[in-house]
Length: 121
Image (cartoon, rainbow, N blue to C red; front, top):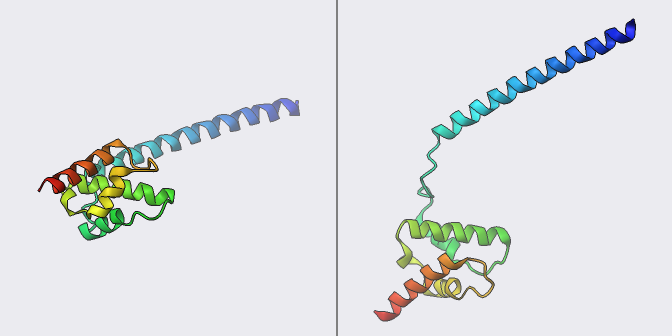
């Protein structure tokens, strides 16, 4: 007799836990949806000064994975701001040649275009 009561209590407890977890996960999902709706996901790095972003781009010595990712993000931000002409030629050369294949074709092409424009002047 006691064994059946324990099984029933376990089943009831399982159902209670599953329903509680389900409610909490639904609440978490709705909170996450509300938070993402409040954020401006289209803006870039406007808070960062152009000099800082250029400093990140022009410091091409480190081969650390995080530094490379930051340089890619910063380069794309400069392109978005249409300030490609502000990047130093020596840094553009590193991006245009891209010996280690860190930056991708889009950044490489933009760097080559800017260098070509500067050379033709």
